[in-house]
Length: 110
Image (cartoon, rainbow, N blue to C red; front, side, top):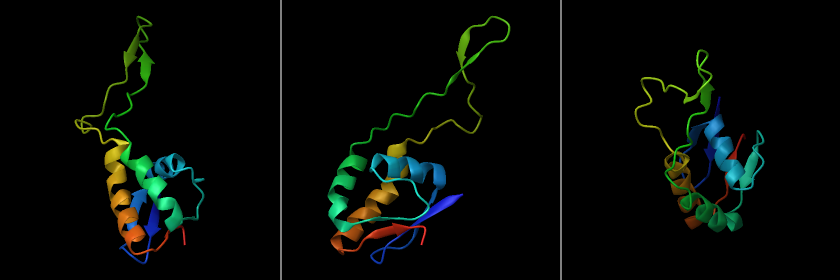
Protein backbone atom coordinates (compact mmCIF):
# COMPACT_ATOMS: atom_id res chain seq x y z
CA UNK A 1 0.00 0.00 0.00
CA UNK A 2 1.03 3.59 -0.42
CA UNK A 3 0.23 6.96 1.09
CA UNK A 4 -0.14 10.02 -1.11
CA UNK A 5 0.95 13.36 0.35
CA UNK A 6 -0.73 16.33 -1.33
CA UNK A 7 -0.26 20.09 -1.22
CA UNK A 8 -1.48 22.93 -3.39
CA UNK A 9 2.15 24.10 -3.53
CA UNK A 10 3.61 20.91 -5.05
CA UNK A 11 2.84 17.79 -7.00
CA UNK A 12 1.70 14.66 -5.20
CA UNK A 13 4.22 12.53 -3.34
CA UNK A 14 3.63 8.76 -3.28
CA UNK A 15 5.38 6.80 -0.54
CA UNK A 16 5.11 3.21 0.60
CA UNK A 17 2.90 3.04 3.67
CA UNK A 18 5.56 1.50 5.91
CA UNK A 19 8.01 4.33 5.18
CA UNK A 20 5.38 7.07 5.36
CA UNK A 21 4.15 5.80 8.71
CA UNK A 22 7.69 5.70 10.09
CA UNK A 23 8.23 9.34 9.08
CA UNK A 24 4.84 10.42 10.42
CA UNK A 25 5.63 8.81 13.79
CA UNK A 26 8.90 10.76 13.91
CA UNK A 27 6.91 13.94 13.30
CA UNK A 28 4.59 13.12 16.19
CA UNK A 29 1.68 12.39 13.88
CA UNK A 30 -0.55 9.40 14.28
CA UNK A 31 -0.15 7.28 11.16
CA UNK A 32 -3.88 7.51 10.47
CA UNK A 33 -5.42 7.00 7.04
CA UNK A 34 -5.98 10.78 6.83
CA UNK A 35 -4.04 13.67 8.24
CA UNK A 36 -2.65 17.15 7.84
CA UNK A 37 0.65 18.90 8.43
CA UNK A 38 -0.12 22.53 9.16
CA UNK A 39 2.23 25.31 8.06
CA UNK A 40 2.88 26.26 11.71
CA UNK A 41 4.20 22.73 12.36
CA UNK A 42 6.52 22.64 9.35
CA UNK A 43 9.65 24.22 10.92
CA UNK A 44 9.70 21.55 13.64
CA UNK A 45 8.99 18.82 11.08
CA UNK A 46 11.88 19.99 8.92
CA UNK A 47 14.24 20.08 11.89
CA UNK A 48 13.24 16.54 12.87
CA UNK A 49 13.65 15.12 9.37
CA UNK A 50 16.95 16.90 8.75
CA UNK A 51 18.31 15.45 12.00
CA UNK A 52 17.92 11.88 10.73
CA UNK A 53 21.14 9.99 10.16
CA UNK A 54 22.08 7.74 7.27
CA UNK A 55 22.35 4.74 9.55
CA UNK A 56 20.41 1.76 8.32
CA UNK A 57 18.97 -0.51 11.01
CA UNK A 58 20.76 -3.83 11.26
CA UNK A 59 18.91 -6.90 10.12
CA UNK A 60 17.63 -9.01 13.03
CA UNK A 61 19.75 -11.97 14.00
CA UNK A 62 18.63 -15.54 13.49
CA UNK A 63 19.66 -18.63 15.39
CA UNK A 64 21.70 -21.26 13.58
CA UNK A 65 19.73 -24.50 13.89
CA UNK A 66 22.84 -26.69 14.17
CA UNK A 67 25.04 -24.67 16.54
CA UNK A 68 22.48 -22.43 18.26
CA UNK A 69 24.75 -19.46 17.49
CA UNK A 70 23.17 -16.06 16.78
CA UNK A 71 23.99 -14.98 13.23
CA UNK A 72 23.00 -11.93 11.19
CA UNK A 73 20.05 -12.64 8.94
CA UNK A 74 21.26 -13.11 5.36
CA UNK A 75 20.45 -10.17 3.11
CA UNK A 76 18.67 -10.66 -0.19
CA UNK A 77 20.89 -10.42 -3.26
CA UNK A 78 19.33 -7.10 -4.33
CA UNK A 79 20.02 -5.42 -0.99
CA UNK A 80 23.58 -4.38 -1.81
CA UNK A 81 22.84 -0.77 -0.87
CA UNK A 82 20.24 -0.34 1.87
CA UNK A 83 18.26 2.91 1.84
CA UNK A 84 18.16 4.84 5.10
CA UNK A 85 15.04 6.54 6.41
CA UNK A 86 16.87 9.86 5.94
CA UNK A 87 17.16 9.22 2.22
CA UNK A 88 13.55 8.15 2.04
CA UNK A 89 12.57 11.40 3.82
CA UNK A 90 14.29 13.64 1.25
CA UNK A 91 11.27 14.03 -1.09
CA UNK A 92 9.07 14.84 1.91
CA UNK A 93 11.60 17.42 3.13
CA UNK A 94 11.49 19.11 -0.27
CA UNK A 95 7.69 19.03 -0.26
CA UNK A 96 7.53 20.57 3.21
CA UNK A 97 9.97 23.34 2.19
CA UNK A 98 7.88 24.25 -0.86
CA UNK A 99 4.58 24.04 0.99
CA UNK A 100 5.95 26.20 3.81
CA UNK A 101 7.20 28.82 1.33
CA UNK A 102 3.75 28.92 -0.30
CA UNK A 103 1.97 28.90 3.09
CA UNK A 104 0.00 25.75 2.17
CA UNK A 105 -0.63 22.66 4.34
CA UNK A 106 0.20 19.08 3.37
CA UNK A 107 -2.54 16.46 3.61
CA UNK A 108 -2.72 12.72 3.07
CA UNK A 109 -5.53 10.25 2.65
CA UNK A 110 -7.94 12.74 1.09
